[in-house]
Image (tube, rainbow, N blue to C red; front, side):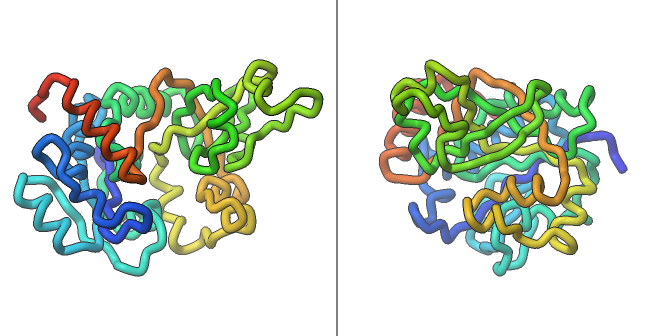
Length: 255
């Protein structure tokens, strides 16, 4: 097995909230190409692969010379999509980058990969601090309760922990709250077991957060702090925001 780290971008075309979003044009390129190129800028990544069940997506990726792997259409999550092609991935560490994150930071990916050097965790993911009460109540933001060593204790769409003796608006001033930035680093063995011996768990089905499946199964998830805040594209408003940001950034060629 090679020592390099492979990044896989699951790319499902039939998204629910914003149909066909991964092929929406941003600054002259489809969104998925922005994700691919920014991921490839990470110095720690030896190979970037797009995993998709769409022939249309595959054709688009191949047109710019990107690497693509076809997957089954019945897979229910990006993790399942990556796990289904694990025998085609020659790496002990696999990074899952979401296909709707066209502004993903290469340096954040490098920090995630570097975190494995001094950790025995099965999975590693970044977290950023929540400072606004409105983010606490946003179910689209996954909140994380962490141990002193950075270990994830629980993930929830609800504001946790609950501050009993203060109004919700004051909670971020009383307790440090964390949100997950949605990229993951996996040790290979986690993905090898995912589709065969890790069925959806009760907590996962209740919260609709796949991270809970791993915690319930006894896997360790380590978190590290980042100053970056995730900007994913789920709505038309998100799309307009990303277009404004890209228009203000200097152009950078992929290498």
